[in-house]
Amino acid sequence: MDTFRVEIPETDLADLRQRLLATRWPAQGAGEGWRRGVPVAELQSLARYWADGFDWRAVEARLNAFPQFVTEIDGQRIHFVHVRSERPDALPLLLIHGWPSTFAEYLDVIAELSRDHHVVVPSIPGFGFSVPVAGAWDVSRTASAFVTLMDQLGYARYGVQAGDVGAGIAGAMSRLTPAVAALHINGPSSHPFGGPLPLDGLSGTELARAERFNDLVATGLGYLQLMSTKPWTIGFSLADSPAGLLAWIYEKFQAWCSTVDRDALLTAVSIYWFTGTGATSAEFIYESMNAPGTWGAAAAPTGFATFAADTGIRTLLDPAHEVEHWTEYDRGGHFPAIEVPDLYVADVLKFFSAHSG
Image 1: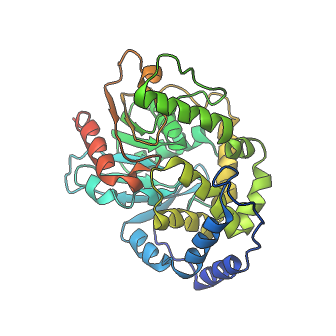
Image 2 (image 1 turned 30 degrees about the vertical axis):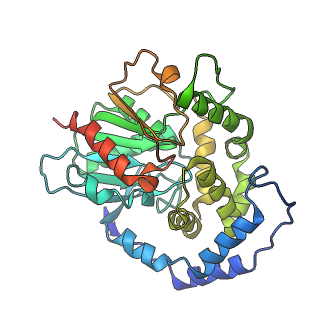
Image 3 (image 1 turned 30 degrees about the horizontal axis):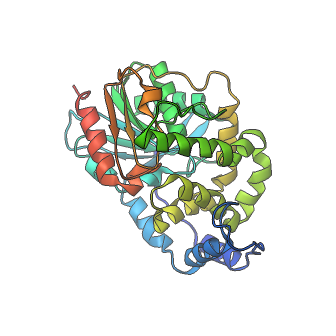
């Protein structure tokens, strides 16, 4: 296990700026808004800011303010942040990001969470600084690696917080070891993605969420279909064109967030760009979506937090109200640690306070 610092060469920054300024922009018709994807005018504005306004060195300093390490597990380099609480009896807490996110999603919450928990934030293999990728990695293999990571750190009992594909990793970890004391999941989805949800009997917020989910199924899953079937095809654009990578990720932030923080978005996109993980993260999605037995039920007590832009519907997911912790908020979305860190931290601390003993 070695210490790690984020240190992107100046030549990489110059290359990024040159590529952005040389972007060949597509022609688009007027008046469509987001109906056909990212509007060219919006991406041009964002790309100009990325090239000449966004301060990567300031972001780098924020990242390096936290202790970071790399270790090798199952032949794979694993990068992670590790902040120990001043409380020796603190329950360790593993935070797992999803796609298209990175470990930097948690920058605004690590310090506060570490008052009550030892905090570990790994990068999924093929994402961020967990590269180069050694072999095929998916949810199940990553779960095993993260169990090993927590064991290496000396944690015999811990909680896991996650969203998106990270929630799949968290659930798989709970099935591998009783060391997982509890899980906290943000943004539970009203699966399956294969078809629309019935709207009968729903009203108010739940009806709005069901309609939003059905719209996602009808018009918003092209990215998942492509990465789950032909990741190499989109991989060329994600590896070679910063504008292409930006459009691919920006569309998801715009669709899934209540508000889009420009610097948080560009922090994530920059990490994908500098590490070349746009393509490898697509490979991870491919492997996970095509591996049998990936998406099983959790084997530990689980709490859920549903934010305003989420699609989780308790009537469908927990009709008997058997889940011990289900909270709903009128703010936030898919990345609550970025969008509403106050609500996120409060919910996580409340849930795990009942599982710390």
